[in-house]
Amino acid sequence: MTDPADRANEGAAILDRLHAIITRYVILPSPEAIDAVVLWIAASHAQPAWAHAARLVIRAPEKRCGKSRLLDVVEGTCYNPLITVNASTAAVYRSIGEGEPPTILLDEADTIFGAKAGETNEDLRGLLNAGHQRNRPTIRWNNATNKVEKIATFAMAALAGIGQMPDTIEDRAVVVKMRRRTATEKVSPYRQRRDGPALRKLAADLTTWLRANLVELEKAEPVMPLEDRAADTWEPLIAVADLAGGDWPDRGRRAAQVLTAAREGDTEFSDRLRLLIDCRTAFGPFDAIPTAALMERLKADPEAPWAEYGGAGLSGAKLGALLREYDIRPETIRFAPPTGQAKGYRRADFRDAWQRYAPETVDHMPEGEPYQPYQPYPPSSEAVRLDNVVRLKPYQAALDEMPPPPDEDATGTA
Image 1 (cartoon, one colour):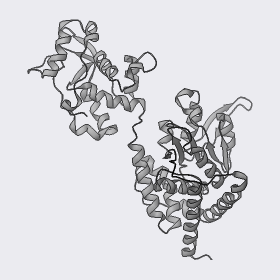
Image 2 (cartoon, helix red, strand yellow):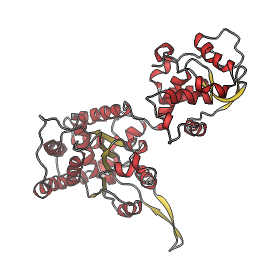
Image 3 (cartoon, rainbow, N blue to C red):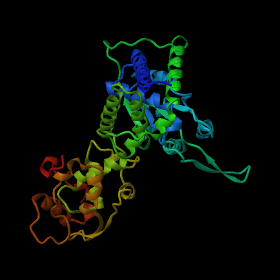
């Protein structure tokens, strides 16, 4: 019987070899990113042990950043790779099958999920989202057999492309942000025919080591430095690191924290989250604001996408649809004359969403001043400035003369 210490040393040595191979061919942005890729590749060899199948997203801001080369190395060392640059949803379903699934590798994923792809691949995105968790099959009606079919979705998957992947995919992924090499950063050229056998030998060693420990991995409950879905995604990688021993347990947890923090600090947001944050600035010091005024203030920000959102600009219907996911809805509010009754939003309805999804400045939000009906106290200077516009003319006629949003520093919402 193999001594546990020898087994651990074997695992650490195999991961170290994989680390050396990756860094021979690719420059990654940080030591933590390298360790994360090492552990993700290793975890693909123990898929039967996992309740969650982490996605690996390899993305870059421009071409020639090494993402496809990294995917080549992943293909050579992961378990049973199935690589494609384009695939129909039905083909991916059938490839996963009922038995042990392959490791799905999608190159040029930006052509599938990027901005130019539109919403034509929602079924594939749904498959990748569902396949993150075991026992989440897709149900289809088979006309040929007149029966309901359950189609498996669970599989490890890696996606490489330019730009951000859909937020629902990245939320289930280990995200590695590649960057272009400098003139002083050197790597060895990769040739599949020449270098492929060494990668496949390492893949076989990973399979032998990890498959011998599937029972232990399935029972593993590693102490996680993360919570919720991030913990689900990283748990297989941390379990592999703990099995390997050496310094890998510490390195695995460090990688989980660093890469998760980097994604949470990403400046690219979903449309809904961007709107939620921008609404906080657009509200200025007011407790309530008409829908038309809120939209005008949102569109006035030259750094925001709202002036051209959807082609024709943000509308009341689009605004309501985006905010509805946070349980924020417009209501009829009685504003000071001559505006009178109008559809609008109240600051109080945003507070819970701001605290949950954009809490970094919630402690500094102003408490809110007039621009609500029948104020019993003198309004602030900003409220007077905006309210004067509203009082001079009917509200709709005054939109073109609406003053810009107040200075963020003055309102404490920077």
